[in-house]
Image (cartoon, rainbow, N blue to C red; front, side):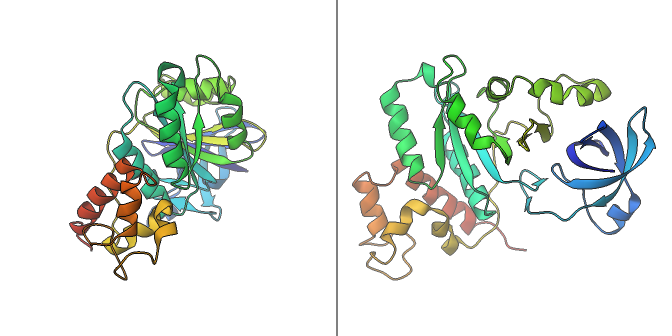
Length: 292
């Protein structure tokens, strides 16, 4: 029997099968021997130990379409980060870290600014404009008024989406607004591990019908950048691309060189000042990451 891993916790993997529900499984020793770790999102083959109790073993991991290192999930179509537009105050440094990590892993990314009913629209529209220039789709939503929910839901249909965001931004409220039936999807798991359905402590995949899956990941408060060469960092900023070749110096890092077209674009408000400030901070951090 084949299924999809929807959650992994304490050595147990919960595998959703199309016709028989969720099975609690252990991974066979061959995975450890071959240094293979099953991931949420993996398609897996099972051997059934007890069909009534829905117990089994994972005996094979089917080929992966892709794999994200952080958060550790497989077979994803896109990532979406949910940020509160009002409270807690948007942490744009944290947001830019997440976008950079997804860019480095070649995962298309969208941003959902939630709680739009509690903020001045002018500032929010300016923020959305800056992030549209970053190469991301931007959605503005409110679970109170329902604004933007339909458009956001359309962006998820038929895809497997990693849904991430800091704690307190209303991620669970957005999921419940988008898919009221989602709570039913995790019921079997919650009953087995005796844990509340609303606190995400591990990556968890929700099956929402119509070949639509959402991977709900734990709330994060910090992200460590992945090792890369500092000279490559600028390649992950789409808003820099129109200015390539226009700087005075070939190979300009857009940090301290004179005659930099990117710095001029920041000065002229064509590139977000906060995005650029974070770029400089990340450049400095990456300069000090040891390569092993």
